[in-house]
Length: 298
Image (cartoon, rainbow, N blue to C red; front, side):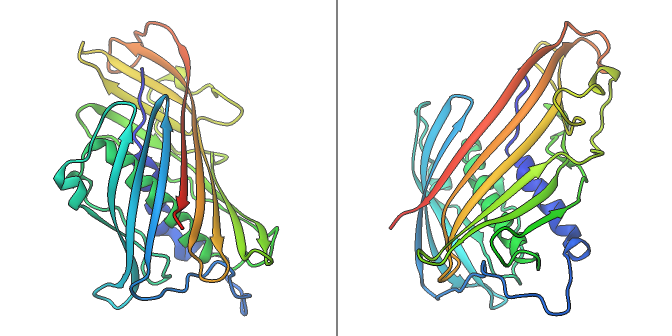
């Protein structure tokens, strides 16, 4: 069965960040954003993350501290610990010593850390944490998100790849970004932000076979993956991918209080004998779903 790499989400974010100066709506006097992060040097943060990836469930803790980087900008440095899963995995010394740097400072754009330093099963939590921070960082760049109900749609569409050139020959996903400031709860000092990663009207992913052109769902296909299995055959899939991210943050200092992610890929999969994906055994529809929860530990 076709699998999905969690690294595509972070790759998509970096493609968007590269275009950010051209896509942010500009006004002469934008209202101040209620989503701004106000840092305190030395502040400590602990997050508990839970994930469900097609039946593989896990829990892990991220322990962070606020400090200034070499450029003088505030960052949050996290270490990962207390990993538990239904597959009996545990963190190695290298994974325990790994540090992930994140920031909501507008002058410190998100970046993907060196994922070769950690065990493969920790890549998902790391890149999902990056997605939450990058979505909020990007929302702060949108001058149209100041009041409850404000909505900004940003067209991107450029495909991001997670192909490794050996096992995964082709792996691409293409999205636009749909931001909504759902609620400003002044009584409880909580803002709720919804970020939907949605298929563009014209996705730019490569679709190497004719059978991949027909929409699998209600939009043009924006996700494709082709990999080679141990039998020498090609596992090919195409379909629709979406991310729905909801973030609750403090109106007092901009800290993330909680976040959820619902990542759905509706696919049509075939096993093929040839690289052109013409000699195939027949289509099988499949749904890939990842659900992530993040909570700030009091």
